[in-house]
Length: 145
Image (cartoon, rainbow, N blue to C red; front, side):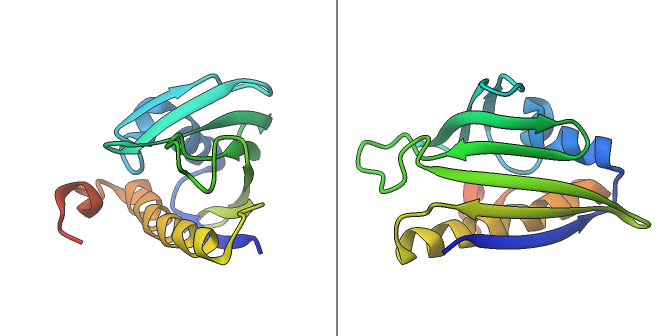
């Protein structure tokens, strides 16, 4: 069962695309480190919280419009290893900003789907906040959850 969520970011599509693809911008709302080769076939690796790194390959890149990449966690015992699921992000221009439609497919179990839904809910809210300013310290990193 795929996870789907849409959020409105108060920025134009190009600025929003940069927030979801450029390492320096990703660090403002989702990751602590990021390596990105932004092209179809290019790889990425994001350390989301210490000891938890996601990795995969970009399959589609349309600046300002859409990005699709495989997704998974590098941990040896991960039920979702790198490349085993797919994240699709569409950006749609709206009068008040950019609507982001995120779909995460191919999660292997209901537990994995629930866990990823919690993560995407958390980080998409931070993305909305960073579009309007500084979202502050990530409570998942500071232990203030």
